[in-house]
Image (cartoon, rainbow, N blue to C red; front, side, top):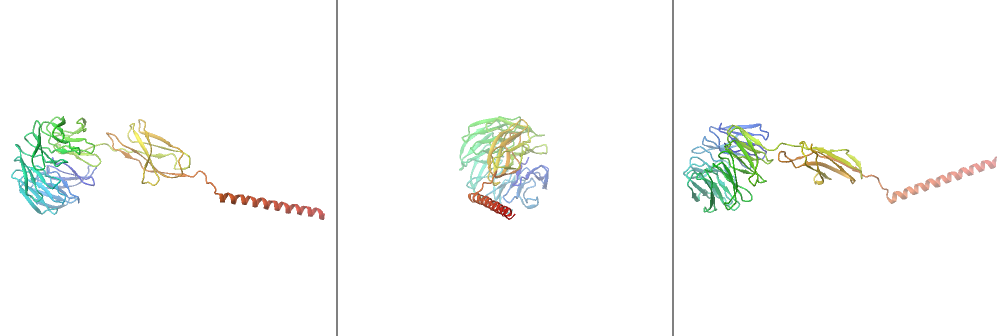
Amino acid sequence: MSSPAIGSDGTIYFGSDDNNLYALNPDGSLKWKYKTNGKIRSSPAISLDETIFFGSYDGFLYALNHDGSLKFSFPAEDSVHSSPTIGLDGTIYFGGLDGFLYALTPEGALKWRYNAGGRIFSSPAIGPDGAMYFGDDNGNLYALNSNGSLRWKYTVRGWIESSPAIGPDGSIYFGCSDTYLYALTPDGGLKWKYRTGNWIISSPAVASDGTIYFSGGDHCIYALNPDGVLKWRFETGAEIASSPAVDSDGAVYVGSYDDFLYALDPDGALRWKCETGWAISSSPAISFDGTIYVGSWDTYLYAVGKDVSNITCCLSIRRIKEGESVQIFGKISVNVSSKVIVWFSSDGATWNSLTSIDTDEEGSYFFTWNNIESGEYFIKASWQGNDDYYDANSSIEYLIVEPSTVESSVGDRLLLVSMIAVVIIFGFLLMTLRRRKILRSTFLT
């Protein structure tokens, strides 16, 4: 049920009801695991120094080093379901089922705690001005100052398990069991609320354009404009506790109790869905290469994404004369008609497009580069990929183009003429001397 978090080196961290926090390599192999004395439904948070923070139902907030060794543990007075949030100054914030919101120093010492009174499943969110927002199961959404004092609270008619999301203008969005998604102003006033058909325990996501994505117990994924007007909704086969994740292209990913992970286009159309062995309440995490990681009740963590591709680049010859041609050819590892870009560089650092060329149905391409000026060139090919495969770049080839002829200078030409003249004169002298010798011999005879 814990949602994955991804480290800067691609390591995937997540918790499990078997009491372990897992660290996996990007290829899915186990890096290490750390056992606690309770199930782990808290999602890990990773600090700038790669410390991993998470809570356990054994009542502790844990901090692990990058190698899986314990850095420190902090005892709360009840189970920790809330996922930690790390402030700009390194302060760690988390809620407990004991009703307290805790603030710890990066070394694990208590800075302060605030007694909300109700159990805190919600993970805290930090506003642009440093305010701390979280909800409890008594139906209160709290705003605290950075020192732990109460700024304001807003009360609704249900429990709040949804973690707040902050919009570009500072608006606070959260869902509630009373079927509403709420939008509050930074000072705690109601902007609007949007009613759905059932509870909302997942956390909303706010895209860069201000669109709010959320899902709930009525089986639907929603997209609202910043003013609360519906853009679209998409219905799955069961309730949704998973929080949506939005990638840089605007695609939306969310899991459902119907066992599927869904990928939707920005307009709400189904891009694809991937079936797991049981329900999904874990929220998806998107890695830098576009891979989506999500956990399932079937006890597996899934990595879903495109397949890896590659492309070759070959030269018919690696040394030619100026003005001659070279053939550049290769193949994408995928049998697909597409476009390939051939690049060249004179220094191996600044690349220029030589040509964009269509491949055949098998992914092969062929190009003739004519009338090349003398010089040294680096050459490579690239493919942008498609919906099923990642993009690819070839290895770099090296081409030497030698000058076709070496033109002599004026001085060189004068020297040549002088040498020819010397040879002619020397030959003439020899012939003259020889002739005189013959005449003299004849006279004496």
